[in-house]
Image (cartoon, rainbow, N blue to C red; front, side, top):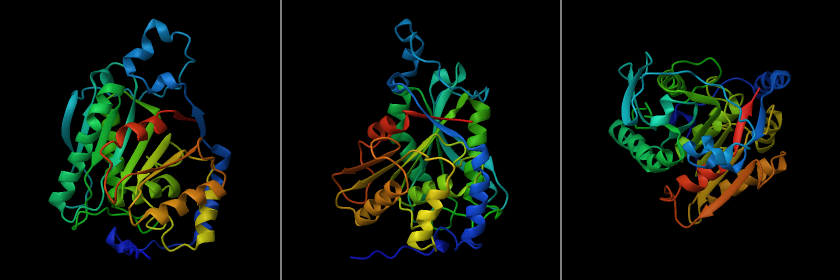
Length: 316
């Protein structure tokens, strides 16, 4: 069986520029590399419980408070503005618990899969927000679900460094809006993506084309049916893809989830093996899980993904 990945133009276009330049840039970050911090299990509990007497012995948690204010609690939609993408106004869907205006809370970026049309992309982003909302309410974190800006409901990814505007600019703008609206703990910003959204999530995490959400400031990320060859390693050989991973200043915690009957399964397994061969440790900073089903979002997705993500923070 073989799978033909869509050309990058389906997301948009093939990246230009050399791998050598990218690796040199990544290597230059090592002197300023961020670090992973493992958090106590109590940080995965409902946020209010972290402040009651029973947790007074919990080690002090890393906090970088965005200091935002004025955002409403509950589910909402909002607009951001990036010239050159669609009409220049882009919608994103969000959710915020009441405590997001009272104390610093984590944030989770959600990226939907290829939708087929702008209207379907809008619906997919809202549905993702709705899927995750019950857990976000119970655990106390903010959700940001942008809408892909492509004419066919796909993500507009950059050709290379410095290419603007793309959906990566929209993602950055939506995150900036959320941080201005709520008290976001910037040491605990996470990402999750499905299918094409997972491809893009790998790219954001590994290639640094959106400095506002990249290896230097993502605490951990998860993908469901998101694959390295589709975007992050598009146009690279297997050895070059491994070199890209090896060049990262830190082992950014990553969770790979895939349906047991998904046609992408062999590729997800290959990605797991590539991470492991490049220094990640399965059961620690690398997670891999198969669930019963095909190329679909597991209805139980939020709980296992959050259980992995919430254990990590990123510190300077």
